[in-house]
Length: 243
Image (cartoon, rainbow, N blue to C red; front, side, top):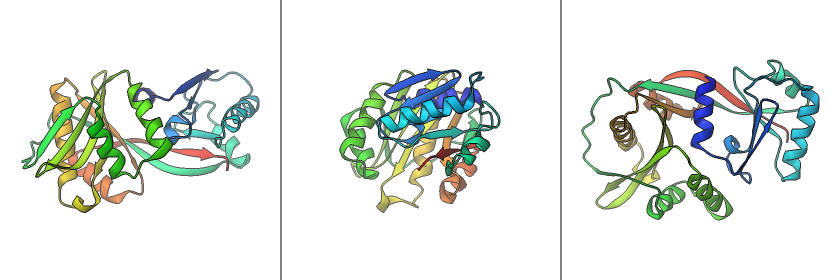
């Protein structure tokens, strides 16, 4: 599980990272809690209350709400209880799922799909499909430009019109699936499944042997699709936020 956490942090690089006694503290000007949170995943020795106070100052000084990513292997083990007593609230329960790529089915894709490097067209599609604008658009582009592992960006076209997109990050044989988005007027038509299969097949050709993704626990349509594809949950995490 900790290995998957490392892969996920590498797949969405923050703009600034601070290492503090086993805690990985990430900042990205407020875009995405994954990139703006404390990740307490390694052994910790210092007084936990002192560390929490220091981290709170770090976040508040940047105009951010103090946020912790709570996994089943946080250090120290009682950190979640301590944060709860300090008024931190739970936000966003997320399932981390994996799938072995040895026996994936081949879909009958009837649309055009292109796998490319990061480019303006793909980025514009993603931002438009997700109503991403202003500073968040600028910040996210910076984060993608900071990606170190191999990545590719996929767009699906119907009659030369982009209707879905997604990206993948390949590291150590693991294919991370991110930003899978179908345009609103083309949802519930099977395009999401076709897009995922195409991304996974391309990743397999690049010698990936396992795929992983993150999905909100309460996103029933997405969870249903991922289960049909063969994904299985490895663990869940959530955020503790001090409002």
